[in-house]
Image (tube, rainbow, N blue to C red; front, side, top):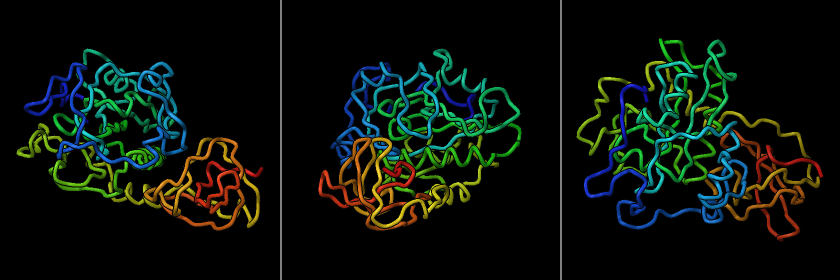
Length: 319
């Protein structure tokens, strides 16, 4: 976001203040945004982990995607006025530890949902480490105005034209796949100024998000997350990176889920969830492998439910 260039979240005209009071959480038509079975059951997309209520999540203080390594609670966030349609990419314009301090400080007037470590020579964890700071059902203060209420914000450590590491790109790509799956966000990447209220959603850099009602995209003249962030490379990683394997299982092998896992109608993240398989569910390999969204998928028959589903290899093991 460039941590010195935004302040307290500002809501649109006609909505209530962002001091934590309840607001109408609806889309532009006044209706609740449709969610897949995944959201209706409270299952986290990356692994299918079952989530509780907001109160339960805060008490447990856990992360919502497997790509996140640690929960560090930020002070600044608001109730959401709209459904989640966008993922906004930022860079910090500062080193990791200072950025983390700023993003979690009550006096800073800023926050983000996630912070990704980029460099191996700055203080803090290893490159690719991901902190979650704000839960998804709260609006973090990372992009101003309506963008905060429609998006998940991801900050990446960066400063002084030092580039973006492979570890940072790859960790962020894993995170984006999880968030996009969880909230039905299209894997479309926007690289020009976009009136986000008029588009179906996707992944966008902060500089291309409006300051307010689409009359301004100035952001104080800053171009976060550019010039070092390569959105084309990142899009390729999100859509095609990671995964691998393909020879882990054979036809008729009996496998078991290693976490609560989403079983899909087809082998891609944007396909419908047929059911969420509890950890320890056994299945028989009947199809695959197939590659999609950077993941190796296997077609399973699940006798306990008499269902045929596609599941990610990452969360399957031999029984």
